[in-house]
Amino acid sequence: MTTKEEIVKIQISRIEKEIRDTPYHKATEHHHGILKAKLAKLQTELAGGSTSGAGGGGVGYAIRHSGDASVVLLGFPSVGKSTLLNALTNAESKVGNYDFTTLGVVPGMMEYKGVRIQILDLPGIVEGAAENKGFGKKVLSVVRASDLVILMADVRRTFFFEKIEKELYDNGVRVNQRPPKIVIQREMKGSIQVVNPFGGLSEDTIVDVAKEMGFGNARIIFGEKIDQIDLLIDAFMQKQRRYMPLMKVVTKLDLANMKELRNLTPDLVKLSVHTKEGVEDFKERLWYMLGKVRVYLRRERNGLADKIDPLIMHRGETLDDVLKVLSSEMREDVQKVYIWGNGSKFPGQEVSFSLAVEDQMEVWFGR
Image (cartoon, rainbow, N blue to C red; front, side, top):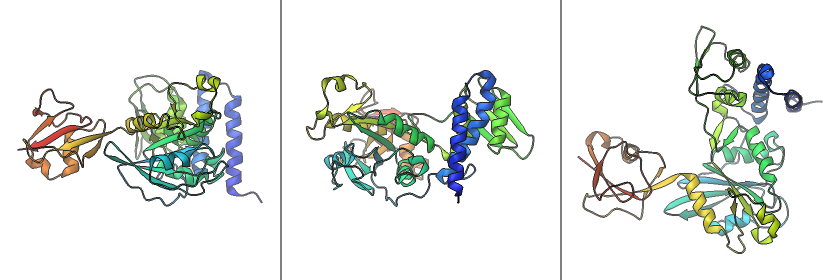
């Protein structure tokens, strides 16, 4: 007897084939839009989510997140995830040269530049993970709950990157992207109104995709030109989408020959845990990708900053955000802010609360 999950997989396969077999151009844009809207709904259903509820991803491992950031090691089996984890942290993840050494999630903690980074070694992912093959739903649910994906492949299997990125994409994870600038407001009546001064997709396509996604009455406001149907569908399914940074790492560099080394592109982090080559570069790239900054606070204006226990903020946040983290009640009393070090033109400069924080900036708040 065919199960509901099997029926959904068959439907997905048929729609994917029709999409592949239908050349995309302006005349077929509308048809592609409807097909991709149906496909997105089916993929969400298969992942255990809902197009109208919270994000999907299925039942996950019970992981207690700790530290200032959470990072996952993701890759096909036997690419060196456990070996790297053990080299970076206090974890004891089983290491072997055969597939599926790790059958659970092994956490470790790495301290770097005053930031505590939790690194999670996940079971090796396989093709079809988004359809729950090989612990797929559990593994991908941990990915969605983390701050950064470290995508790993050994030097002789870099073609794995594209395969794993597809599994992430099919599970609603968008890596190294930002959400499309589209605001969708449900309305009680009035059908579907499109406010789009930028051009791109036709209004008929936008309206019919909205209807296919279950939006009968809505106001759809574009903040930029959108000419990709996938981005439009992502806007409708924003609760099921997870946008996060991804870093690609090539392991087992010590086993590579000259031709294999020449084929590695500059964007890849290259390392060998056994020879320690590239490990420090890995840590530095990880730090940058997380987008964290350290803020040193002064208790007294003319005193020394606390550089042992920095406040960890995110790149792009402001001094006002720092104050809110310290105490929302202080905001009414504090009227001035002074900075030293990075970001300041001179020591003790008085600045605006809207100033973005920089790494190792020293700060004193006063009346």
